[in-house]
Length: 148
Figure 1 (tube, helix red, strand yellow):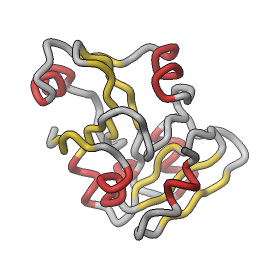
Figure 2 (cartoon, rainbow, N blue to C red):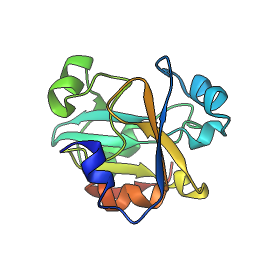
Figure 3 (spheres, rainbow, N blue to C red):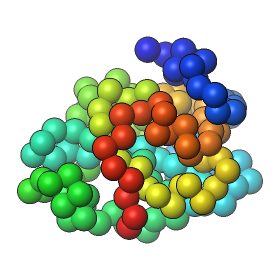
């Protein structure tokens, strides 16, 4: 399903922001969009012994505690999926993984709910989705909210 089709079903306000070049880092996103770095919401794909999961985190996170992620999912281990695995699982390239409508279960960083809007991927490297963090719960299959 296309992101535009998914967004047409939500009651939350959103905007797709077009830009002339890919935004590849939280710092670039913060600067380009004029937002707090914590509002950037990259979607990472995690590989575990129970399969793949999406991890939507706040850009303010310096590092991910993969042991905590594994404990939350009741797994033995968790690590970042390879670029090839990300492409296979999501259909998107690393750096462009969509913030919503993923076909894998998701974990969401609770700190994103401190903001009215968060900014993340659309599946296209030259556009960014601005949306309420509450919509992430409605438009994804959420298995847990993480408090790092």
